[in-house]
Image (cartoon, rainbow, N blue to C red):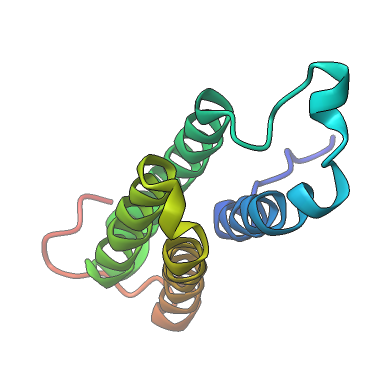
Length: 132
């Protein structure tokens, strides 16, 4: 009988953050001819909000799970919240694109890395308020 594969949500969060950074920074360089064909995803606010919502969903699940089940610390969630707020600000204020994008992605990746390290370093030691 085969055991189900577990998803590493922190790795998925880091991957989606990196994909977002690549999309935002490199895609305009390679796909500048898309408007000629009537396709515009480079400055498409709806697409950018969708990507941010995906990052938010993965991040909230991953970081809350790590806090509740493993390390009981708020730091990764606070760093992630700052990153998501910067990412949303970047979507709203396009003129500040790179000035907001780099710290946003850095904060999101740092939050997932902190969560990963805290989960692994805590070794399932639980506080008195643990419900499991």
